[in-house]
Image 1 (cartoon, helix red, strand yellow):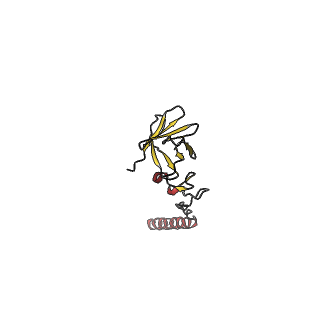
Image 2 (tube, rainbow, N blue to C red):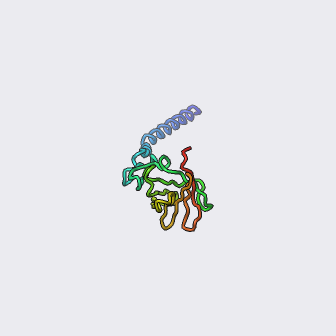
Image 3 (cartoon, rainbow, N blue to C red):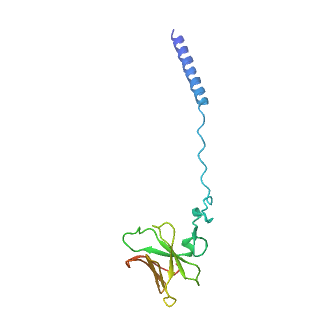
Length: 155
C-alpha cells in the first residue's frame, strides 16, 4: 500500500510540474523597453540641439553653447540659486552694440543695448543694466542690486 501512495504522490507531482510548464508557455513575454531618445533628436525651431548644449542666440543669429562663447556671470544676490550662472553674449569680439543675457530663472534671453559710444561699458534696458569695468562684468536690476558678476578672462 505504501508503494501505491508513493506512486500516486509521484504522479501528482509530475502532473503539477507539467501544468506549471504549460502556464509559463501561455504567458506572453513582457514588451521590450522603449528605445532611449537619441542625442540630437531634439532640434528646436531654429535647428539648435538642446541635448548637445546648443541654444539660439539672437545677437549672433546662430546656435551657440553659452558656456563656450559667453561670459559666465556668477550669482551674487542672496535670493538667487547660487549654483546656476548667467551668461552674457556679444555678436563678436568687435561688435558689442547689444548684449544678450541668458539668465537661469528666465525663459528666453534679454537684449540690452549699449549706451552712448563714450560709455564704453554700459548696456541697458528698462529692467537690467550690465556694466563692464576692466574686464569685470556686473548685471544689476532696476534698483541697482548686483544680481550676477564675472570676468571676461578665460580660465
